Length: 420
Ligand SMILES: Cc1cc2nc3c(=O)[nH]c(=O)nc-3n(C[C@H](O)[C@H](O)[C@H](O)COP(=O)(O)OP(=O)(O)OC[C@H]3O[C@@H](n4cnc5c(N)ncnc54)[C@H](O)[C@@H]3O)c2cc1C
Image 1 (cartoon, rainbow, N blue to C red):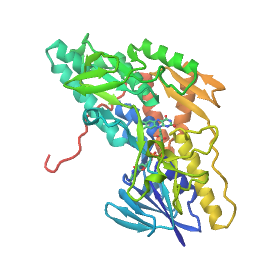
Image 2: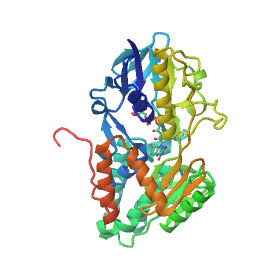
Image 3: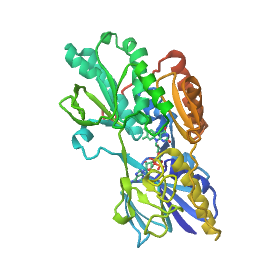
Image 4: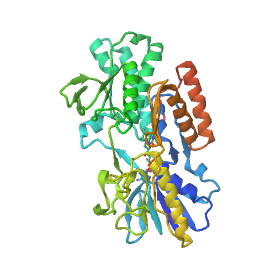
């Protein structure tokens, strides 16, 4: 039986595996450096203490129970296409078909100073780190006597005006409004600002003009300071310097400004395109390599005339590519013709604070704003969670947060230490 190895169990990799559940043609192994799948669109709610990590994650071994899919917990380091061998941090695996679905990582654009000090948000570990850091910063502010120093603790700059940046900014502004003074009476009337900064002239730049306006208005009403057509240049000694020359004092910089694909030794440079993404044809086969495929954020397909620069790095592309590749692998086993990948854009959405969400659906033909946007955002995110266990937990946490304007998940959990 031929062996398929899937590297990464995010939206793309998991959707390949799902189509191959109980298949009789291939022995399938999914390799991931984490032992769980997680739902990135709600990471910011874990990072701000509105959801617990288990609401948006689920162990692979349980997902694959009785489904005929093997799981291997390991980090993939290198591939040798000539020997059809994949090298892991703790061993090696041979394959007949190899699927790269390892996604992307935060891009700091070579700025080491920012990489060392900023907080980023790509996985559950990052979300827990952000939650701990935000709470620790508030605890330090609560005991700080010097008002100027306290203001630095209370000032947060978020770089990146995409959905993650906008959603984090909205959530932090809501917490400042409804929770801060209840949890920290010491911080009543303490000064501090929440900034969101983006290099584009609009927040949520790829979305419609109506969305740009709605987002700007909703964040301004929440007293978020918005700086557009501006970059963060440096973050040193509690000073954040912007490209327009302004310098502000702050202890916290949240970086949601860009991504770059994961890369692997053994993949020739000629197979990589913009953002280090692996270039593929319409069947997701990597340029210049036999039986190696790439899907989701790690890949780029420049053959679709609607997306000449490649498809957007979003969950829907990853899900649809995973589905199509799995169907093609099954077709290959039966010597049936393959179908090219065609992206169906269902639209984009983002939530801005507690009461407001924006959505551009069906190629910007339908625009939802405010409460209607919020209801569609809640519904779509809830049904997209990986199983009923996560849906029920998330729904419960949302119901509590909405009715009480609060949530009780603001604990600092640190990694364990023997003897502590
Ligand atoms: C905070 C945040 C919010 C987002 N919000 C939205 C949204 O609202 N809507 C939307 O459409 N998109 C959103 N996205 C983008 C979306 O998450 C990605 O487009 C999508 O996850 C891509 O799927 P993927 O399977 O290619 O990669 P991922 O989902 O990132 O999965 C990659 C998997 O590979 C594993 N992996 C990585 N490297 C290795 C290695 N060396 N060895 C083994 N395993 C490895 C990882 O552990 C992970 O499980 C968001 C992303 C982030 C970070």
